[in-house]
Amino acid sequence: MKKPDAEPVVARNRKAAHDYHLGESWEAGIVLQGPEVKALRAGRASLIGGFAQVENREIWLHGVHIPQYSQARWFNGGSRRKRKLLLHRAQIDKIERKVNEGGLTIVPVTLYFKDGRAKVEIALARGKKTWDKRHALAEREASREVERAVSRRLKGRPD
Image 1 (cartoon, helix red, strand yellow):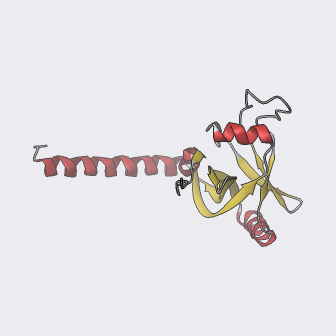
Image 2 (tube, rainbow, N blue to C red):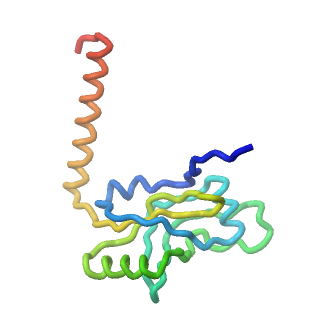
Image 3 (cartoon, rainbow, N blue to C red):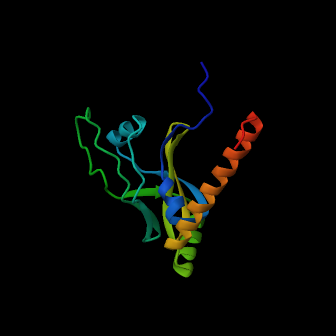
């Protein structure tokens, strides 16, 4: 039986798009311990509040919550411990350069499995101001209202 082509998404950081202007993104492998993989396969993780930092020419993921797997017998590491991300040296250097010169931060956007391996999509992000967030919400609400009006017209209902 053939496996489905879709990548099972474990967690999305929808708040990142609300709080940041997202820029360039990369797919990175993530170094996990056995029970953490089981917890991810069970669909339990949260990227909210997570960020990545370049330390000693390596990228580390901080603040991502992967809860302890209850049926694990041996070492269940901290649920919010820092985890190493796996990228090519040239990619790490490029990310480090952009973060240092542009006042950007690195945020995790999606956590998923690809070919049986846990991957995390990270993006360069610039923080939004409060008025940016309000403006984005207003635009989204206006577009929803337009879609509702169009669907009502197509169904023949009066406004």
